[in-house]
Image (cartoon, rainbow, N blue to C red; front, side, top):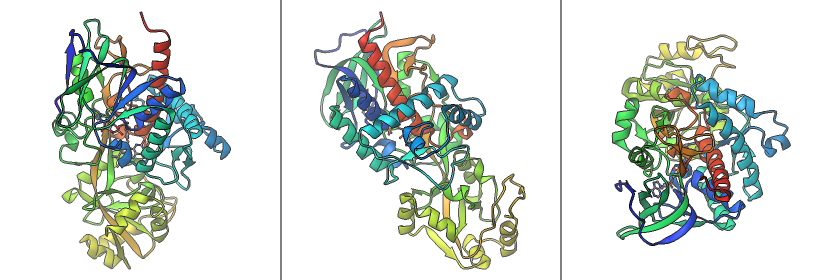
Length: 464
Ligand SMILES: Cc1cc2nc3c(=O)[nH]c(=O)nc-3n(C[C@H](O)[C@H](O)[C@H](O)COP(=O)(O)OP(=O)(O)OC[C@H]3O[C@@H](n4cnc5c(N)ncnc54)[C@H](O)[C@@H]3O)c2cc1C
């Protein structure tokens, strides 16, 4: 990791100047840039990689939004109130209320505007993710984070945003009045270069790729696979600490209980929501799979060997094949077929009688011991995929107000420092179970949009 630091009270060396500098060209940074260009404001995105990707490119790319023009065209009844309630219900009321309100509103403005920028969104059909009461997952037709990134980057550059790639930001320069002067960055092997800015947006995601921080802050994930991007190195937290910024919800994160092992791919939780189950090596279920995939990471890691089997049948295999991640995992040999219970028991290494009992208990209209209701039992042939629990991204970070202004330890905002996406506090509260699916890109795209709107307002009338 490149060491990052804050330089306070010194004059930034003479350099180029841009109205808004953005650290990180993931979904958040690109959303900031697109919205800024809509207001005619120049900006430069600084991206450490040769090609913008970040965790966004590794994601499924599903963005929740309630009340979008697309939902209305599809006659989907939904509202920001319902969505906000769903977020708070998942977080047991512990999600930052000002951000829930601000992000659920902003993400609709973003989705509607991104459609105008040529992103051909669709809304996922056929199942609901845990805790969502309406179909609100917006996706590009390819249903991949890579395609979402390609389309966002194209929209940003077409709108006139400048992206500086291979540019690792390592220094934040701030004066004695807490006004950001600019940044220092390096190209590989090069000297530090400087860029002055009127406003800085931190969009470099969280600390999931920083093993020491994960060990300290998320001990349950200490030994888990991290499925996100290496750029999640905790720079925002390090800068925030040196700046005297307030940090919040550092115990919040997105885990996932369906990380295909050893192939290393995501198997969509849609299969669980539609009737699939997770079994351990003894052939028994160990949690209510419909409660959420984030906390499922902990449940799976607690099983023998830290693994479980996703078990499903032919109709669910068809559903799974609608997700490119699953198709890739299947091509890599992750999907095993068992003609009957005896064969499935052999695969899992468990007692066939126990497995028979587990599957026979999946009866409709009957709360099972884990509190789950099934629509139907699984029928042979069975399919099974070995999975483990993984850390996808962190949800705690720089504390921000309802305008994405970074807050100092005394609760007052820095004059010209904004943050959103994984670099900032999210809307999942302070624990793994608080993550409602989509909270990541909600914070990145809704938050990015909002940060740009704040930047546009501040540039029009700078704070005194
Ligand atoms: C497997 C997986 C599936 C997921 N699926 C979903 C999903 O379907 N829906 C959802 O809502 N969320 C999902 N998430 C979470 C989602 O990916 C993140 O919440 C989201 O991408 C965060 O966006 P971001 O722009 O904040 O960060 P990123 O996309 O990670 O972008 C940050 C960028 O900053 C750059 N950067 C970092 N440090 C520096 C530096 N010092 N200088 C310059 N550049 C820097 C990085 O290279 C990176 O490009 C998933 C995550 C994973 C891992």
